[in-house]
Amino acid sequence: MNEAWLTVFQLPAYAPDLNPQEDIWSLVKRDLGNLAAADLAQITRAVKRSLKQIQYRPNLVDGCLAGTGLMMGG
Image (cartoon, rainbow, N blue to C red):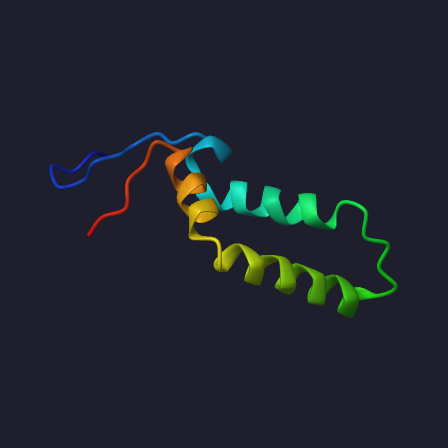
């Protein structure tokens, strides 16, 4: 039953091209591609280090957002 106040949008199950975080994770995975970690703690440190490096390069973050065609509100 569709109520007058309810609008239903059918969204794709998975749309990485509309999700800027997918591009961020792609950058992280590129950094970690050849990591031969001894344990989970080493992987965790490497991921945090990679995310920190991305954080200080706003052009990368902006590029990931621009790649979706979406805009930030504000």
